Image 1 (cartoon, one colour):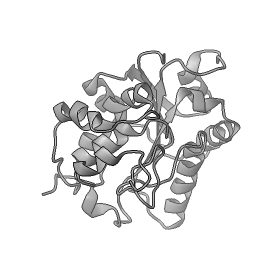
Image 2 (cartoon, helix red, strand yellow; image 1 turned 90 degrees about the horizontal axis):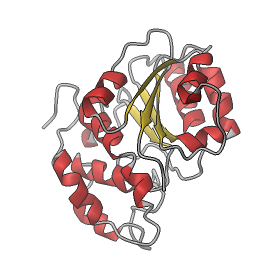
Image 3 (cartoon, rainbow, N blue to C red; image 1 turned 90 degrees about the vertical axis):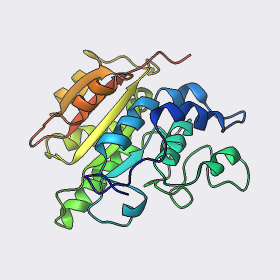
Image 4 (cartoon, rainbow, N blue to C red; image 1 turned 60 degrees about the vertical axis):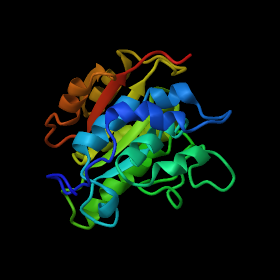
Amino acid sequence: MTNSTGAELRTHGYADLNRLMSLMTGDEKHGPAATSTLDVLWVLYDRVLRVGPAAMDDPERDRFLLSKGHGPMAYYAVLAAHGFFGEELLTGFGTFDSPLGQHPDRLLVPGAEIGSGSLGHGLPLAVGTVLGLRAQGRTDPRVWVLVGDAELDEGSNHEALAFAGPSGLEQLHTVVIDNASATYGRPGGIAARFETAGWSVVSVDGGDHEALYAAFTAPHPGRPHAVVARTAPKR
């Protein structure tokens, strides 16, 4: 069964996510990092992204890149909730023979577009993905990348951010999970940094689903779009 965007409907609801996440155990699960992304991921996959298990080979699908690869429990729970794989895989999270590693592997995890875990790679890869789509004449697919605020300290993100704005990469969307874990302060904060580089930017409460949806779907003609989702400080 599919929705109006062609993506398959979810097999579980938002209320099931805590149970799905509880199936994943282990010493390196990075629970707080995962929990900070849960609401953002849910709204994206449930209401925004035009992608589903049956559309992963469709060249016109939206692309979602998880750059914030630490603590992928929420990512795995949301993928399972939307039918990319069965929830029985969750109980093996992080074990030797499980496809669900402590960082996602695009060759093993159904629905994953990139392998992640080395912070700072996702935004440059998203820029390259948009440029590749443009080279193919595909201007409809949207590219979304989820990054952490501390990742923005990486030089690769400085370059990608500075390039995307002046290049008018309208298909590019970045969600920054701002849990106050960045080492370096920035004049004006994270939003000002994107604005200065020519991006469209919205800052929202990272736990407010309606505010997130409005921010994700805000028009931004001719410019890449960034959503800064404020969450509880990392502890």
